[in-house]
Length: 348
Image 1 (cartoon, rainbow, N blue to C red):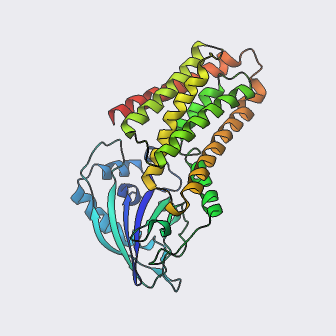
Image 2 (cartoon, helix red, strand yellow; image 1 turned 90 degrees about the vertical axis):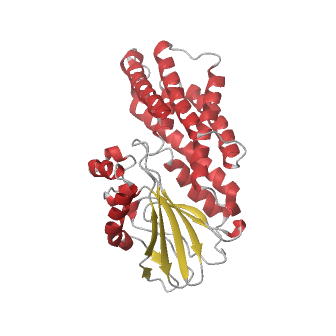
Image 3 (tube, rainbow, N blue to C red; image 1 turned 180 degrees about the vertical axis):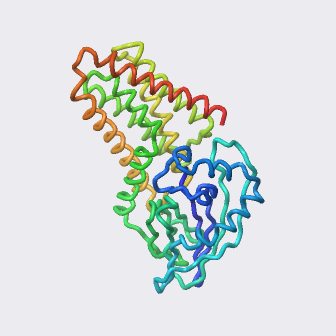
């Protein structure tokens, strides 16, 4: 599941939201704050049934569900009371690849007095808010985690966040895209962990990986480099397979491993850049947001290493049976998952 994206236009007496979202998850009653993949949801069968409906039928289901969804919005006007939004339009695309979320567009309006605070119920998951129709350096853009609401938005786009506030918030966004959402990046880091004989060896590999993906993340976020996801994502999966299989066939680091890790880091950075490209960064605080996101990613990676070290490294790395009993079996599992992703993402 990807977060919903709301493009918001604020006027003195109304707010209009154009929201891109996977309607099926909402109608099916999936708790989007907890579930990251619909396959893990208890009501996944309902989601899959809705996913196969043609646009006219899904639109009818949404209109029937709308009274519930309407109550789950938390849009507040100047006096602080909750405003029930009006449903203006629904646009549902044709059924495509059933393995991918179908992104529909919902247009709603809230009548009241500005400024407006935008948010919705926690079970609807994250909401990306992007203010439109104001100068770029005054527009509000933020990643609202489940249950959060925006600050008061005005028609002139006068809301400003300090550089420190933006930096701190995007640390959380970056961390969230490693733990729990970045399973492919987690598996890559674990692939490095299972071959490194010492923590210092592991850290310099992660440092090379970090430097590389920081470069392509910055270039991608600035719009200077753009590679389609259908190319980048299979290659990221392939990098996981390579690192995992290398753990199986060798017990020592090769002299060209730093260069290889750096190259793979460039790929993973393009993956992170596609995340930022999807919801954008606040133009007025671009640099603090970019740095904060990158710091959050690094904190997430270090957290993965710390957990792996506490669970496995401290107790078993010095044992003679560590490699055949833990490192190789774990690497084979990682390689199998990566191979499946290569297949899945290539077909997608």
